Length: 241
Image 1 (cartoon, rainbow, N blue to C red):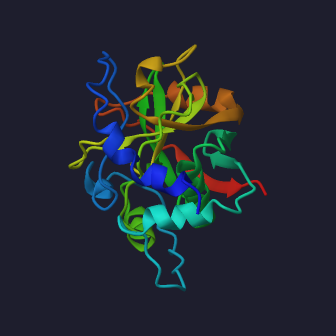
Image 2 (image 1 turned 135 degrees about the vertical axis):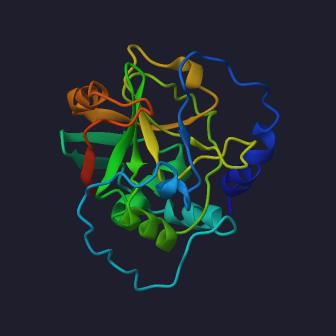
């Protein structure tokens, strides 16, 4: 086996010594722990509760098996584009091949149907839109069935947070090493970018089509908690084979 897997397994320890994060007046991307995020905002969703398709296998991702799983999952992964159909239009992202754990995680969750009927639940004007969560029981159940795990940061591949970059927020729960919340993502809308995020969050792809849709989402009215006043659904996410 190559040195690829041990490098990422040790990445957590190395990045813990990187020093203080750069300060910014903007609120940084954040996510709650996968198993409790759905309850963190209170029940607000009015989306229809479609039946959750049950997994026919007993496999569940955990902190112990996630790295090994995604290491093997990405070996034969030839695809790198995902289209997200939202209630405000569709856009397509291209995922970076040299950020393999985050790329394979996003494709795996897409193929599992996780993102379907989730929301863009956080909008910070002229900064980011954040999606992949919803405060309904359906999303909480899907997270439970997929598993409880975080991903190690992978910030040393040279990818910057340019406008249109898709990146992964860190979990806020007991997380000194900035481990990434695997179920959520954010997209930068700042022009030319939000470079104070570099080194702290893992950029793993970019919008290659439909950035105008991302901009429209970023312009919707929001409440004091940065939730859109009107729900913005990810109706369907699909891997472009």
